[in-house]
Length: 507
Image 1 (cartoon, helix red, strand yellow):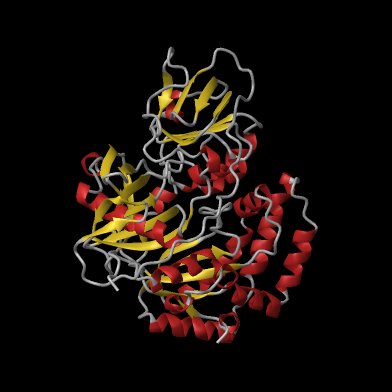
Image 2 (tube, one colour):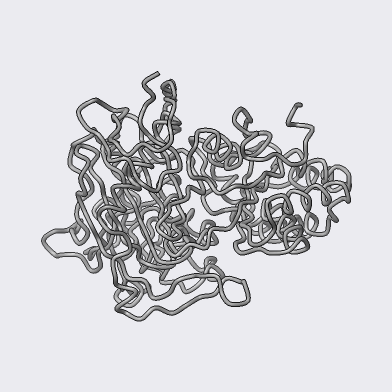
């Protein structure tokens, strides 16, 4: 049956589906499920179902008219337009046929807790990640709550940060969105792992950032995560940076997300052991092999077992500027753009480039309008709600966050130098202070005189698409080593948490 006529598609039916049917996440998870990766079971409400419901309700034509009359340069009207369109989509009553199919699929999944995730059709491409732009809801339980979460995912397609990002990336096609529903993993730890260094472009390294509890604290830049760098030549652990986590998000007694304060001893403890890092790196390398290009992956860890909940292309490796495997990686945190004076604050270089400007310390995205073009945005954290402000900033410096958080990804895509995880930028730097930010070295230093914006790293182009390698068959139960796709000289230990063996079949 043509999947375009179906309102619900299960992951194991999505192996050949394209993003127009299921959105980026849905199609990717379908392929990974078929390939035997440890993906939590679930289903997709395709983008076509969203369009059908908008058409049935009459909202689709109204949305098109409003967007056609929009001036992308009119930032003042953006907030009002966003509210109007979100209210319009949120007022649509999901039809009885689609509702019945969603409820039936939820029951087949076993009910209970699920994660409900947006997956727009322009999302997770080689040049536009839409990282964290559309809504995701965790620990959703019950039929009515699920249907409401689906509608809220649809409405998030017209959030202010999404519309700003679409304009900045030149995306002009009709917005459409799929919704991914997965069995909720009650994660005690979570990780985001890039199969290449997203800052330096070094394809010989894997970068993993991990935290206790649900992964939203990592992707949302809420804490300073642990950062582990694995050199694929070995493999061996090349760097370990222990983060600082003052809270974690867990499932509370009432089933809802709960924020738990962590004592310093717990919040400063290492999240993953050496064996766990190498096992996770092996899985990440397998995902890259499967897709034939570097991947940005998200993992939920429950009871020692790692589950893959997302994979998408890394959008910011810069073609000819990539670092060759084995070349020097990013500079250590704490090195300054002005080595003689030393840095005022230092952290992790999250988006390369150097920029000078006057500091603007902001507490919340609601204050974004006070930032003048070319100023340095300094904030405790930068969730995706900051995107309209980041777009106008010369550079970004934050107290928390890691190189894999959504704001860091978007900064790299927009070409805005970014330093994260300084822990004290908002208390050390002062509004109006002239500084130079080096997003490669991870430092903000004194600037003798304010000369305006300095050199910025230009926004990267799309990844060059390489032919996909043939996929190897896997056989369950293997505990031996398996050859690396990048060369026969190294091998990874087969991770015991994998749901299928990563060794090639002898047949």
